[in-house]
Length: 436
Image 1 (cartoon, rainbow, N blue to C red):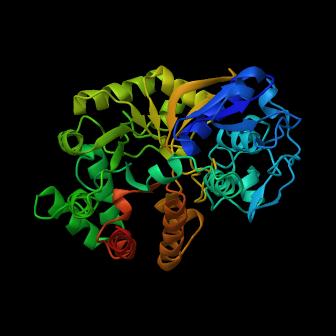
Image 2 (cartoon, one colour):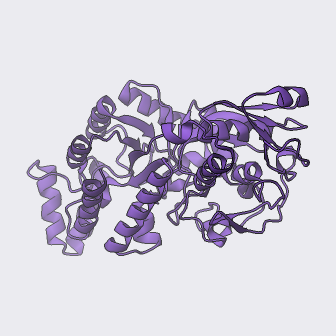
């Protein structure tokens, strides 16, 4: 059943968020009009997005100014409770807040365009965010709002948007291949230097392991790809792999170099079976030419057009990073999350299109938010394996509750059979066996 939103002023921001709501809650049947005649004559479900009520049968949502503004201004936000959920932008309509504006504020990452502190890596610090300060970072709050609204519409108006029953939960495991191999494909200089350090430090076990791997007597410890393939086949999963292809090892880019035969073979094998994307290097943040070169390399190695990406170290700045990705031909980005804590950076679990606040327009870049990364649990939050397993399962439960998309990030070199990593490997396998 179709639905119609009436407003006295159609703005790009309002058009964007109505389209989002249409995809999220109204089975792509939510329309927008500024004609009162059209609204009055409409026979479907009506939403009045103006200051004054028009009829008793409509859903009246009183607007705040946000969606009719063009500037990016500090917003006075005070959270309160609605239907057991935190909300903001209080108004006096049939629901007590402007759900359109509040949704836009969160998924556009409005607060990231305002002056803010950065973390040690120059990223937007999660402690600045409303979600962290108000303790809802662990929730896909936007999804929960729209689910509650659907229930409200059914109870009060006997209206049930069709998408409430047609959307399904999805799980997309993703992997950042920062360092494909521990010993293989490191080059003569790096291998010799590592051996000298190991000999000097009398690390006999590491020396023997390195020699055995290079001699082909033992599998490289970071080569967990066959095990991952087995898990994907067992659970019928379609993962996405992101490969770091920095031309030079520098700073945070410590990958195996892309010209290595073993790397070429690894990427070709994965491209034949799975979706592969670029993991733009730290160095590419400073040079568009470097970004293009890395994308071209992956294109050559896969024989496929490269349209998927995720920034190394989750290093992104709005709107610069997303504009560069669009210019480079990327259509789907998986960076929306924090590199310092797990949770929902945009307070939503399902994909959405990026809105460029400065240009004030909807773009064609589709954002796929993740909520869990192993590196966050291990290094940033310093969780035990049991605590990390519990956190991951909580994310699974809440995303499944809203029929969203659960996207996780794991690294091949944290899933090894080495004694220090075996518990984390076991945790991931247990999670898959339990939930899928």
